[in-house]
Length: 600
Ligand SMILES: [Zn+2]
Image 1: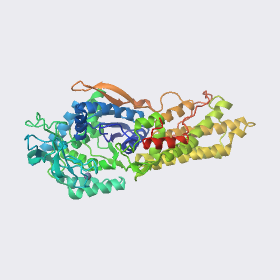
Image 2: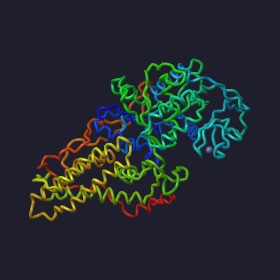
Image 3: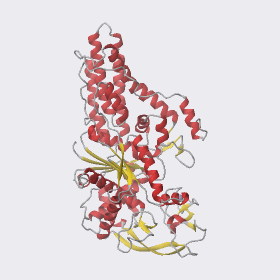
Image 4: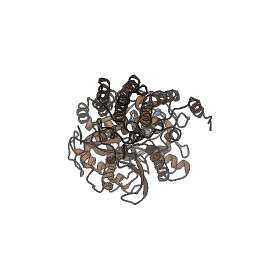
């Protein structure tokens, strides 16, 4: 199906530091492969995300450095923007949650839920300092995690097991300010009435049989025990609560997770406002046949398969209490929650503090982005936890990308350049020629179907199998032995180059950087695959400056089928290698870096 509106909603990286390759193997590369394929297949993609900048970890970091939370967010927003551009992530808009637009959209969703009765006030216990009588924000309370027993858990979450907590959950809570035991007194908060969505969420999930089974099973199990969840927090950093008595309060904000997921909508609206047609976002959110695909690591499923759909259902008036849509009108629920499992590093969990990590920027300083994208696509954690090892990265790069695909391109273009100096003129095709071209042109349906269903590992496996067929054809036909028969040699070379062109199209969603190079080596002109760019913009409401990622992706190839090579006679130059072989020494060097023994 073509000409559909497809929203690619990519998980929002938290603005607490640079991204490592575990992060981008979950939300990053898969969402970009999907978006690039959908654009090539003729659909209208809107790919949005941004940095998630509210919540306690940012304020804790700011306190530790003696700067403002905004300064921490500004710094990390820019670092993450650079990481994602370097990887070739083709966002239509990558923005941030500290914009005026995002606050306004988050507040509209809150008010729509409140109007329909799905958000209600409730008095809970909040902490105060007994010696000063002042409110003690969640982050200033520390204690033992009731779930995993970690003794440094904070009042809002446990960094060890990752569970969200309330301060009253902690065992032996103490103030981080002065060590005293906090006093819990009544504090008013607003709650999202999740039980009122049990039926509606269940009905919706019952129509989602095409999801990855682990994601669907996990989501269905969440429905067994839905409880109201606090929509607001005792914190001074976040989106203000849009109520007359609360709007100006410095101790109450919307809970970071509830505003972060609204980011998909607010970023779409910001994109539309910047595009000159402020209503354009509606095509992706309100057209009945529009698709909405959400990409993330598995630790975020609860927020995308339960919390965000509940917010949307409540805003639409589609939970047990009924209601009517808010001022935006009815909003579409996710079509699919596409969640990856976890990537580990040399057998261990990624950990910045324990130095079990390779950051995207360090990776890209030493290796090609497409080498990383290839590894994640072919060996990433699509359906199960997967280990990244440097030995396996090197092997995949050298044996598959360089020896398989790069070498096919290199030796075919070299022979054509050397013998003809141009795209050769084909004569009559033999059965073997026709068989290869049938294989390559026939692969578009198979690979496209797999990509449309987010079976990316199988999709790149099939594309690389076709590359193998082309290599076998070249070995069998041995055009280098056809000096005496230049007409046949030219036919073989033309067939090989056509097959390479088809393979390049099939691989373009995965390898956008090298796809442009191969396109040019084959005598192609113009832009084949478009890379994202950073633009410095100002906030649409308050004028403050920030960088966004965007791109003019409509300039790229919008074909998902075999397209004819450049005309015979189009000059071809001797190629430079498309990919670089990695020396054995990189493995030992990288392992030494992991041990903290930098080879410099
Ligand atoms: Zn814990």
